[in-house]
Picture (cartoon, rainbow, N blue to C red):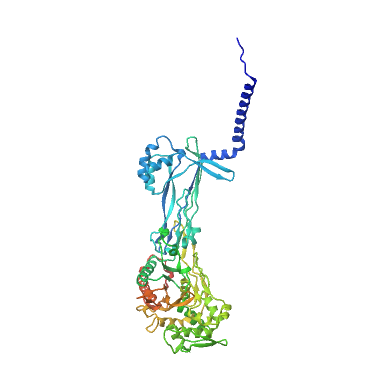
Length: 610
């Protein structure tokens, strides 16, 4: 019997290999249980947890009568957790494909378990993919059929899509919601309009549900935790859906007839500051905002500035009358081309017609630039600028929408530097204003000298129609005395004469109802100079003049009539007349002393109709 012999060299090599193997094993155990303990524990916990965000439903936006302008519909984002796929699920893929419109080959790829590499500060790490989107948007009815297939790995996350039933109706008032078709479901980011301004109330509070899974990926109900979502509140606007529709129809007519660069129409209640309609061109459909140029998304009524032109003459005339510096019958020689101001001989602006001596009332009704400049010089720069600021020019209106411009009202120092400014500002040049500022100024006159803050929101209410917050009318300040407006022959009568037979806006008059207002045709600045071919045509007016209920402002940018310049009296005034006629019929407005037919307003809060 021979004894086995192992050479010392081989024995040493084997021993070394065995020791190295044990060292590697001990290092691996140390790495898993000590060095990477926290990371691996978290990964294990993550694989056992299921966390789902339950989104809150965004609140409604309705008009003053409860007509829905913006709502939310429920859709389901359908996906699969490849880690939960079990034997037999593949056989159901053809039926699933037919329901959701996804090819079977794509479904097979989505059902295949995958590993996702994540880059962290400590380097890269691998995690199993737990969610693959199959269809980002299916209806609830389709989801019920999908659930009936019994594929546990396939489930949906409900989310909400914003819908605007009226399409482009009041688009610039409402704004829009962006959409993100990603695995991380979000309701969207509010952009512009009421969606942004009232987002705090509309968005609600998301909830969540967290459960633990066993080794077979079944939910353990005893470890579930859940916070229910709180739906958003609803917003009731001052907008009247019918008046808004009238305004947008009139905008469409103006665009068709005059091919302007832009149009803005605002309808408001002067006594409360409520905006009843606001329409712009160009416009867009908030349901498909991405299909339109960015310029269409801009709310021109509050963001674009224009020179108000002759509509600003209500400021000049009101200031001089209010200060007692002139009376309606005082006269000015409008044939003189120059005037002395503080020892300087200033050139006066020209008129479209040659005027001689005009009274203050005639200067307003005939819209004499030279006459307005004479009144402005009599006022002086400090008073002229003070009243312009009091009427809201160069200031934010307080409408509360994003993107508002404050316009430009030059300082007194600028008046001193540019001596001719005192002759240009009275006729509405060298002033930049938004359409809403022009509307607010006319509304102040219609409200007998008291400026109201324009607003679009009446109240916030919950799902039970309980009012949570109410937005009452807000008086900003008294700008001019009531007698300055209503005294016989003063400002109200002057503005009525504008719409009279010899005025610049005879095409704005209504049958049996007296209209007061002012036209404006401002030259646009092109290449640093006033252009004789490009104008902004404006008419702002109110009715009934004795007891105003509505103010309507129509601004048409660069309208063309048979290739020629279209003026405020020939473009904006007829549009005002069309809208005013429809509003009279819809609201049942009759001359003061007549019996109003308020049946058209049945069901509405009639506090705003006086």
